[in-house]
Image (cartoon, rainbow, N blue to C red; front, side, top):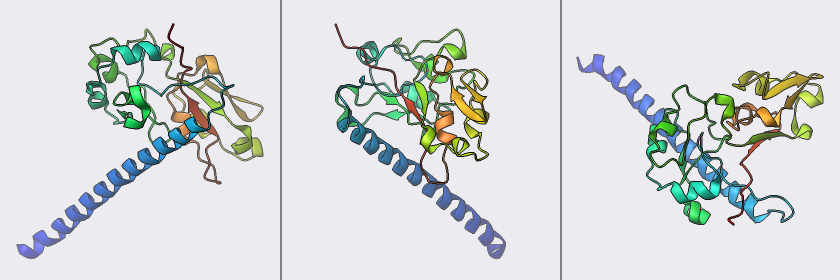
Length: 211
């Protein structure tokens, strides 16, 4: 009986080991992306509009979101895909509020929008249709796009949940329709060309100044 059980224990040990390594890798990727975000803020051009963080679906305007969100983590815990995490302390007033990084994991626009339903502070509000959500907008850098180099790549079009509306093929190249993009980040997540650089980034909404 001992010999029969030993292979099963090894398999279970390896499986738990791989799961642990996967969690560590995910946490490391999140930390790297947060550091990159902070570096980007330091390099911010004052002539460019200030942008906030990528929030869960249904997030209201940033200034009001920060006043209503009580950092309860209910939306973070409700997300079935575990895409949300608490903003780091370095982000000041926004620290502890929910955000996500598409390069680590995008929003999958789940049917039930559990994160929105979990918010009892009205910081997140349900939209009539999926296309009415506005988390941000994707931006394509043609100089990093394989399709613009004449190579066969259409991952961004294939994985966009609003493909045909938010992103289309035009002349053999992907074209993002900003007014239709909800900012879920799926195109960014799946865009990783052979140079190791993404051609697509997802920009958070512009932060409106308090009056």
